[in-house]
Length: 455
Ligand SMILES: Nc1ncnc2c1ncn2[C@@H]1O[C@H](COP(=O)(O)OP(=O)(O)OP(=O)(O)O)[C@@H](O)[C@H]1O
Ligand SMILES: [Mg+2]
Image (cartoon, rainbow, N blue to C red; front, side):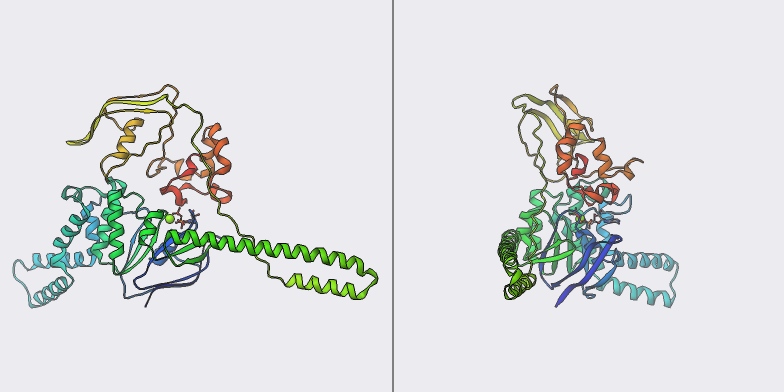
């Protein structure tokens, strides 16, 4: 049975530049499919169209109406002030409405009830019970325990959570919604290693249909049965996981290149023959006719397009060699929020040329550690940078909240970057042409490694 069908879907934001261009694909019930494609090719836009949050310009989109569709979005948004518990309870929006109505009726009936009120209450409580309303609290507790969401976090504001904690709360919400079709937009972006493994296991055992956008090759290898790549607005199909996709893509490239080269060699040879025969055939009609017939044969040869190699970003951070110099020293550095200690008595010496990974579960304080190091957060202890150290910082989420930030574009950022850095990187940056002058707010990379900041 088909769960999702997309036929000749076209979507554009700028007239004459189709982002999705006659895109067609089908997803069968129970399939686990990865959607791949370079930044800005329209993956999130496709999800927004599938969930009905965005209109499209032409084509057909079918989502099985008997199935529940749930989305984990790249940048989750909930109303300001929502706690984790509120977010979880949005999974029960219908039941919560019934409950509120029942509570109002209970209050009205406190001083004596009419027959009509009793009938309505009876009908409401039947619906509440059959919809699982009385198991709601138990279910929420169960899912929170499974996903490691502690009781105190449920009272915390959603906006104050770390990136991974937000994803986890969102996943819990989807589990409670008992979704049949899961749309996951870069779900592993902020998850810690253990949660990614948990999610992989969950998806492998999930009975419904999964469509996952991801740039995480290991995750895709674990969960995907097939891959749909969006390239130039079209869909390319690969019947395997990421490793299969990589091999197959290379094989298709090689085959197309070989065909192209063979055709070009043949055309060159025939072209040479035609020119010679035309020369000899000035006074010989037979030879001239033969030359023209070869010319027609050349015109009929199928012309394979030369395959384009993917543009890769080339950037390096190795300005000057300062191996062995002190980059920074930390002495007894500690940080607490209220009575919660994130880390204490950290002593660290980092020297030039080192490459260090900072690991830890979600919410353990990795981002806070970096902010303390850079002086964005207060902490106890002593931090000292080497005298010639210049640091660059790529935060987890880039906020441009100032008035000028709203209209900032990758181009204008580039202009403000230091000259040396501009010279090194600008020509190799991923922002080209119109993308470069688009407001940052509409830039899909604003939530992911945003090379525009540095180019
Ligand atoms: N509301 C909008 N108005 C104008 N342009 C938009 C809008 N939404 C998205 N775009 C543009 O459409 C293109 C596709 O965006 P989309 O978010 O779908 O990309 P993506 O494939 O999900 O990228 P990523 O892998 O970086 O998440 C981008 O160039 C983006 O700037
Ligand atoms: Mg996206």
